[in-house]
Image (cartoon, rainbow, N blue to C red):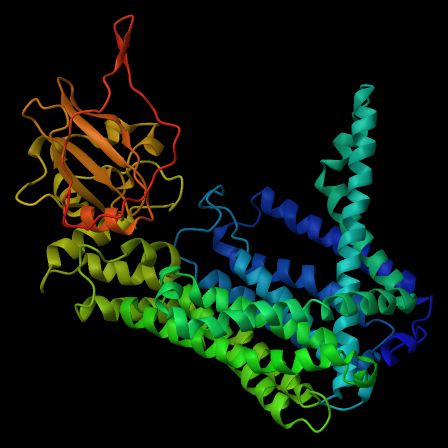
Length: 608
């Protein structure tokens, strides 16, 4: 039995703390209900969202920290931690709302005049950041010094993680039981419980009260936490050999396969970061608090040392992959977030590599590496949701620099990115572009920027009315010597599409989308049909009839077939007679549809 398993501390929390915790949970629910009700009644409006969002954040997260800390921190220390934490959270919430002013709201179901809630990304990272900070503060209080020992950090973090997980599970089960009871009563035509559960005045306080109760139960029964932790860590540690075998095999195969297949996935950085994170988690599951070295199986100790050396090469390859994308296309929010994750991965990877080679005792030096990495992670979480390293601001500046330098064609530039991911900075940049009156491609830039500013939603948006010039910019003719028919460009596609936008290529009703166009006479009547293809997917076939251009159907082609994509890129597509005639039934034609999957022919792009 390991020292972690055998050492189960008794709870230092008095049972009298239970009442305080339950009262806090209940009051938290009541206050959150009042905030919610005020928002639904439009007492909070878009104009004062900068007050609404910070208040919602503080009342959601700070009471949970207070419940966790009661009985473990002296009152003075508790308030010295919670008051600055609430202030930082409120300021970050204010900035999250401020940066979105002037940009489309992330919740498209809300009215423009409604109060704005914090973005989902901010919620996620705020929970993660304050969890890490609270665990570190708790460890410092436990040790009585500013920088605690690694064992205290480990105890504090794992205890909090299990407590929160159990509390969430307990709250979910409570709701399942309540919903079951409501369904039972509803079967006998008694809907009172169902109606009560639908009421926010009941649902919100019950949720916070149940969460507070579960937090207290797991705190006064530490054996539960330690037992679950020991089981989970042992199981995870035995997954480490499998992970090392697979990830190590992947790295050994790269010299033989080259990096091109990896780049072709267009997700190399994310996959490599995920692999690095898996190795770090499994290594720490084996290492635990650093005091169980002798109890760890020799195989796990050996495998963990190898795993510690694998994270750095994964992070370096991911860095190279990201640098290639940034060099080609500039920074985006996703690439900046990946870069911040890479900073953490490189710190962790280099530190673990050093620990694998130089630790006097099995991997003992990953303890200071973990502490240092945690502080770096906290700084990055704070910086990227503040003006210091705001990804939206940095990415907008990068994209604008790419456009001005001519690294991207004005017709192909992603104006929608500025509108929907650039926050207020992107909207300001679009307004500047819309006012462009001189320079190369000024007319194109102005037209595209104005069209992007008119959009309120990126997905499920109503079809835009696109004029002839803008539509012509969206369509790139690939067939040599051909142009898009004037009648096709002049047609009112907004009217033609109406409620069936999903049946048509986006470039016909969205100013920010582009398509490839092919002109092929598929009907042998002397008039070419217009075939349109988006980045991937089928060829949309349009035929000129008496009422104008109409969508006749689609031609399915493999989207991941290199020879076909190369041929289409060169416009090498031709018509050929059908191999089998249609069946005519009651005057209607029915065509054979093969069951066989689409195949990628081994042909060169030089053949149609």
